[in-house]
Image 1: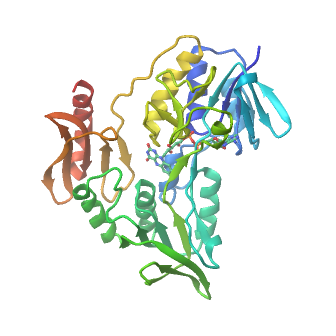
Image 2: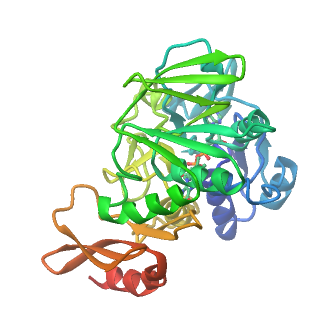
Image 3: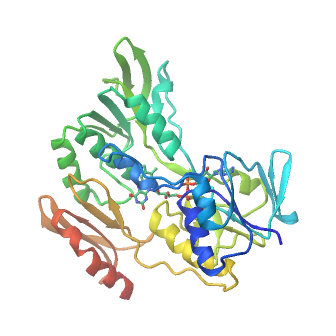
Length: 374
Ligand code: FAD
């Protein structure tokens, strides 16, 4: 019997494999990954300075645990849904069913200068290790981007005695997730930790100097650092799906059964667009993995998302946000003061999302309940 093949051993691929094995312990299962196949929690990478190490399990341990074959350092180069096969260079592998869990690509900063090799981005354990090596013994870090990942790294690096300069085209922190009033307390706390902000501005050049790097912002302002971390975001990896004729939009489009437009090909995680939504977070991929595992084991199960809060790992100012669905009409109603705020996104008295800071984060359970029933 041909195997179920999962491309990708990130949280999406491995969680799906674990869930699948709960329903089907024996049928052939192959995972393929371009990296070394270590199992780890990616969200831990942005708080790695304050932890002694990032826990991981290697591909051999995972293969044993999952009763699966895992092909590591193996890049799939094409998929051919018509013939139920995938290509790895000149080699071909046949599948019974295929799951695309191959994640997203980082946006590259478009800047000039002779120091662009000192720009790092972190979207997996390998790139994290490269970044850690680059900042070893260095104190001054510029973070470009003020989203979730940028804010978490800013807190982690500043708390471990790094001097952090945050450069962002936006005017507030986490503009896609937080209303400006709720982002303000986080900014106050990060500022108190020593983070400097350059908002509403882009990075134009990175040049080497004797003592490190000189950054030229597009206002002409100069900033001196040792290393640049780009955290300007990621985009679902769609090119191979497009070449294979799958329907794609921002991500690989799937329906409520996580089926792509081609039979026996499914997608989940950062590469997938589920019902019009690309959700680049852990909670959605966990929900997808649980339901897709049942479908792959022969019990078609439609996906139903419950509330999916994102805990922002900024211990200097705890934040939890459960964003309203994209395009929702309504408004934020904000209560509290100072660092403690509760913001509810409401449409005709119906709660659609929330953002909490400080003391109010403990209300997330009650609000999740309210979201489930509203
Ligand atoms: P990935 O983890 O990117 O896995 C993709 C896999 O596909 C890899 O194994 C890769 O090698 C493989 N692959 C790619 N192309 C090929 C190919 N051609 N052939 C073979 N294999 C291939 N989310 C939250 O909800 N909360 C958080 O606090 C949070 N913090 C984060 C902090 C950081 C620093 C980052 C970077 C992300 C964070 N996220 C957070 C987002 C979350 O971690 C991701 O949404 C999630 O891990 C994505 O998992 P994935 O398996 O879809 O993709």
